[in-house]
Image (tube, rainbow over all chains, first blue to last red; front, side):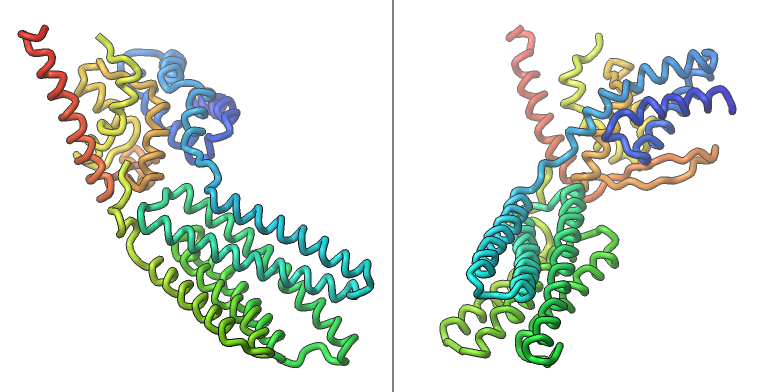
Length: 277
Length: 111
């Protein structure tokens, strides 16, 4: 290996110690180092001298890493709230179902079905809530790329959790229905609602893959999940025992969510001009 | 006389945006341009420029792309975006206010 290449390979190893310096950033810094060495060699230095000088001028891994660390954002407040709600709701529901199991009011299969479906649906609703927060804040200021990327990762993870739980819940429900009613599936209103939610969750995850991490559309789209889950979960209950005020409430949920979806299509910062630091 | 590091840090964003307003450019050349224009008085620790460039990109003020130079070396070029031009206009206004205020205070009769 050429002497300079060896020196640079060793330098890259030391730079990798800084956690915030990824491969692409190291390529960029290496390119800078090579330009600097070339310039110093042209001005009369030997290659090792030029390398030492260029490295000193570039700065050490801890200092550069610390500067890159400052670019990291703290987790967005709505994300922390949503994750807190998912965990709390899951725990509360688990305790409630365990009590009912203890009291002999429910079978393990039915309790597991209720738990997984309810947490799956709730998680989808909370991803939609994140979408609403995103749309609301974006009316006033554009989100940074780092934050949008991190939100994309969070919504994908929550989307996977929701889809996985709902799918397991529906399968458990089918097994329970077979045992209780002698059939797996009959396209009743609840089953149709569950099917619609699963189709939505699969479409959401598929859209994530298509969007390849550029997530504004995904986050705006997640608001529509609120409509699908509200209709699939609560709409089916209404069909079996219709009350006017509940119907109106559901209609309001649909209208408000659709309005947020449309707001998400507007340019960032339209209510206050784009943010410029 | 070298410029103090706090002032160098504060001026890094308007300097980078102004250089990119001239033309697309890459890190090493941006530093050389600052040295040339300041007669070597503004001196960055070279590695500190890159977090600034990445922050500007994160804020969508600049955009980057990798290209190959004539020598075959890969370079990451940065170009100013419309929001970056807007930010530069604001920076110009703010720095003009600061320099004009100081100039008034430092006129010979006030010295």
